[in-house]
Length: 173
Ligand SMILES: Nc1ncnc2c1ncn2[C@@H]1O[C@H](COP(=O)(O)OP(=O)(O)OP(=O)(O)O)[C@@H](O)[C@H]1O
Ligand SMILES: O=C(O)C1=C[C@@H](O)[C@@H](O)[C@H](O)C1
Ligand SMILES: [Mg+2]
Image 1 (cartoon, helix red, strand yellow):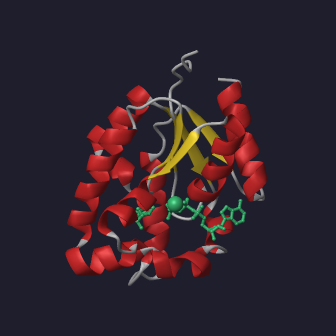
Image 2: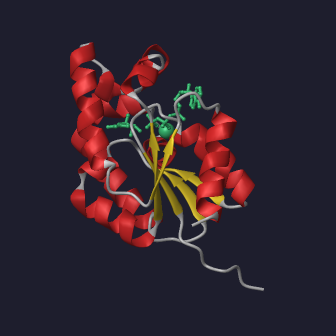
Image 3: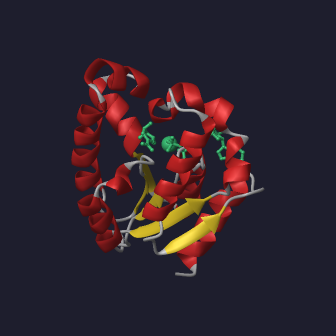
């Protein structure tokens, strides 16, 4: 029997909120394929994200990201973790909102700062910025994620609890 076509769950949110970790767990529970756009970019270049940024620059990274988001976000039955910067592109934001069920993984700035040391080495966008500049970026990006179908506030939740919240939000939609 053909699988019923359900809109893909598209996870958005700031760097480090847990789109990759909780997204993979949620995909298992929903029995859907998990796609991480950052991982697809890493595979396409066979390089880490910091290496792509330093060798080719952010524009080249964003162009590959655009291609991959366009290709994946119109497919059904998946859980897709977007890179934290995808919604800077208006056209991609609209495309995701039109074709997918966009779930914003949200976090307070206070809770997020506890994660900064663990993630900074692998997120070039956070590097060479002081904490005030990172805080401004955090709120600028939060504005972009306001366009969503569902939101999960992740403060104080384990990775498993975030995944469960995503699953229950999707099932009750
Ligand atoms: N709910 C959680 N509680 C504690 N730590 C978490 C939680 N979710 C994720 N983490 C940890 O935070 C770090 C960042 O998580 P993850 O890579 O999933 O974020 P992301 O949203 O995919 O970030 P990016 O947009 O940069 O890809 C990882 O070290 C992960 O183990
Ligand atoms: O928010 C961003 O601009 C980024 C988020 C990450 O997911 C990666 O896509 C990359 O580090 C850039
Ligand atoms: Mg990720």
